[in-house]
Length: 136
Image 1 (spheres, rainbow, N blue to C red):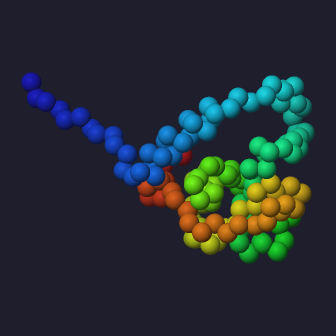
Image 2: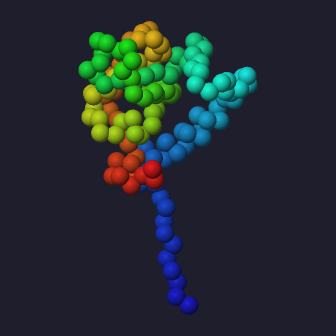
Image 3: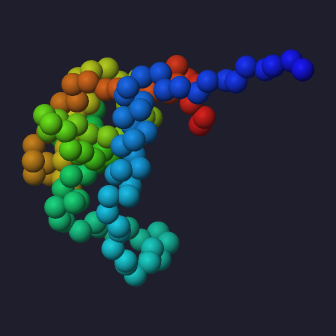
């Protein structure tokens, strides 16, 4: 009988391993409060202004720093890090951007930046996404 070698699925970078470990930890860290359901279709509900929602913010192109109203294209969330300088967002939000091209606005609401604007200095993308080998 001919032996067929197994295909090794190993993580190619520590960052991918961190993302894989971080996602389950973030999603299971707290349970969502029960609500009254999704509500009627086509109706937008404003999120509550609380400590948790202030950790979520909007991503903008850096050239929008002076006029934030209506110009964000993605959201990101602040996550704990020793240097207090880490956000997580979807890979497609960073695709094609260079370091310094984006700003993050924590607690963004109605064109206001209550905690200021922060330049995204470095972006890390999984190798598969960056090389166009993602599943989507």
